[in-house]
Image 1 (spheres, rainbow, N blue to C red):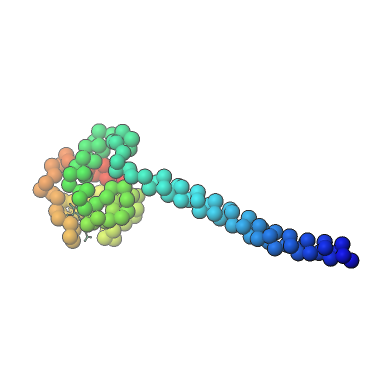
Image 2 (cartoon, rainbow, N blue to C red):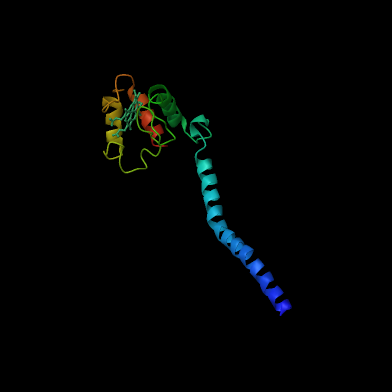
Amino acid sequence: MLARGGHNAWQAARALPDLEKDGYVKLIPPLVLILALLALAGGCGKDLSKESDAELGLNAQQAAGRAVFNAYCAACHTAYSSSGLKGPGLKNLFRRQYLPSGLPADDRFVEQTIVGGRGMMPAQGDALTDEQLRDLMAYLHTL
Ligand code: HEC
């Protein structure tokens, strides 16, 4: 009796920590997943604007376009983030179906925006030569 009672008490004492342990164990897979996703997001979140043209794998034309972007666009737009400055972030510009305005994300509408301006965005057409515009477009396609 005493021995049995003792055993039961021992079992009862074990039951709680076991339950707790099981509870924590069940939390591990989702936690690991969350940590992995955070690590991944951290990796993707590394600031590509600080990378060299070579590190970004840009060809000569795209690199020239990047210089145009930094001179004429970077004050208002980020290239590698979707968070905006004065204008929307241009990350994945052509990888999306639509521009922030809702227009189709294709060369025609992007060129129109650059050359003619849009809303609060001043027209850049007079500032850029045809070649600079072509280079810039080539660069924007890498985002
Ligand atoms: C003075 C700030 C400013 C500069 C400089 C500027 N933009 Fe913008 N840009 C904006 C603003 C603000 C918008 C949002 C316009 C709107 O939809 O009202 C915008 C919108 C855009 C859009 C989205 C158009 C759409 O249809 O949604 C693109 C693409 C763009 N800009 C590219 C560029 C490029 C490339 C350059 C450099 C040649 C540039 N911008 C220079 C402020 C600027």
